[in-house]
Image 1: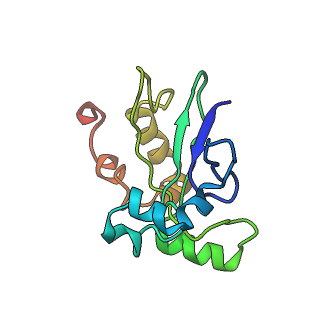
Image 2: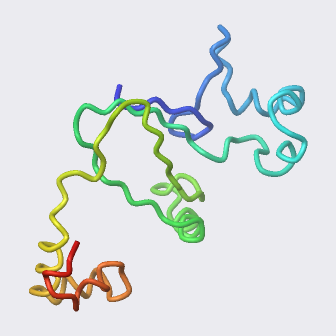
Length: 146
């Protein structure tokens, strides 16, 4: 497997490894478990009966595809409009913590090549948008590019 998910996500809910295969969500609903595993502040507010994040442990041998996740507001709107496609109303912030050495964001074009495409193809520049970080490099001479 390439990914191990730990959480209450409906596509792959975690089970407690206690021989009973109890769902993590059901485990979290039990008051004695909330008291044991969560601070008082978190018991009634943040966690409720779900884990508000999905812990993914990745085993990567080849490049993974890039995923784009909406912000919280857009995620709520998309879920309300298309719950069949957008399974939950949550945003998907991600954090990487490497257990071993890895190379990230590899195989992208050099910045100079990206800027050259943006200058040659107005439709691409319009799609990216002037307020994008790349916009600050659009007027710079190639010698000034990092």
